[in-house]
Image (cartoon, rainbow, N blue to C red):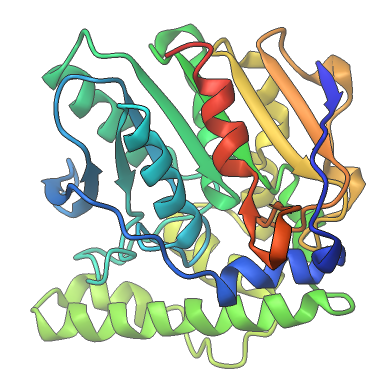
Length: 329
């Protein structure tokens, strides 16, 4: 199903870049009460940090952040506050190395990595098999979520899911970031990713994980990388068993998995997202009967700052996402 939504950007933030940058740079991070962190060991001898919000026996929503994000991202915390108000618990899965501490393997996270979300889901299900559960993913996290839902088909027991600003076709998005003002986003993200890898290598060397550190050293000098095509070819493909960047993009793009999803799922995309073009959007016949695609007029990339009086920002996603989930939780 394809819908146009009633989202209306704030009149003073109509530009796609203003929509994208304002919440990322100027939003005051919401204070979230009842937070607690749990570290779980993964089957490969590493760890994941989960940030929980809320107590009791209410429904639980798993949250997946975007590239270089974390449980501290404003869009994550804003949703946690709203979920708590509704009596829902939430848990943020910090991707490996994104919780403030480098992980203990050369292995990182990427747009197609679904083993960790499957492990977290199974762990939570084993603890509380009767609890209603939903999931929300943003950007890279949205791609991971949709790919995982498609891979699992009817084997996953979720009440509902929402994915926002998803790079549904990775090669098109990588190329979009090579053009115009979008190169500013590319430069910032690549700078953070290079820092992430540099800190990881130092952490592995410092803690005696020499074999893992050697895997990163074998990638060579990454300092000159200037595009996602290069980064994903050298680092992502090099560390995660893909033949090359083309193999990674082909196997990890989530659009091809939409027709296999059996969970009620809302996909929210802005028609002016500076990280992608309209070519990434699927046709109606690519969607399963359980997937609802909403394309907004404006909103940027994980922006969606709506109209409000006196220049007070209103983050529309924090109304739309709970509204959709509320039909199922």
